[in-house]
Length: 301
Image (cartoon, rainbow, N blue to C red):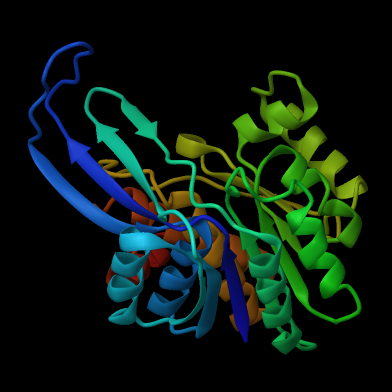
């Protein structure tokens, strides 16, 4: 079984405008709502690929009710913890000449509720995959990822971490199967501007030396680079279509990589399917669909 954990789920409110101007009233051209959070996105794309997963996390308030209701009609199993205080966040994504995001903070989570999540991890068994993805509410301790990984450290499972800075770095001692920073996040981790392919590879290998087995770097319009656990470098480009939406593209790539490796136990194939899924989301208003993934996968193979 694949388990995804989203500590800070959201409703993503996407607004499209011809032009966005500060200091005046702006009128939308179109509006969309999606139930988001990186782990949830991974579960949703896995479902499109025919893989079952269980989504864990926290929900709160009227927005949490809406997320729960929306996901109940989807093809994933959910097992969220209901919080006593606050509301699940709303993230605003403004699509105009440029993309602008305003992300909410998330609800208050106390120690008893954290312990409830820890107890859920007891069902994870050898052979399973555990995906830790995304930011954390500011009421959670910085070591929350470490505490979860400590809970499962004696189990023979694949750990996938898609997070930034300390959340990612502090997970490396648990030797995750896969991490997926993008180039900007790689630059932030090592406090240097990384632009070239050579430097991208150099710092990806440093993360591998620090504990990660496989390092997948998403490069936006340049594609993706994988340094696999055998030290081999793999690269994939992108397909040429109109980019509609980049939100969730990285999460889709993670889902595709997990599915690809589950299917063929081959890193090259996993990167191709991950790239197809990431591209599919970029070319659609929402997350990747099976039809679009299948269409693009034919171009990657």
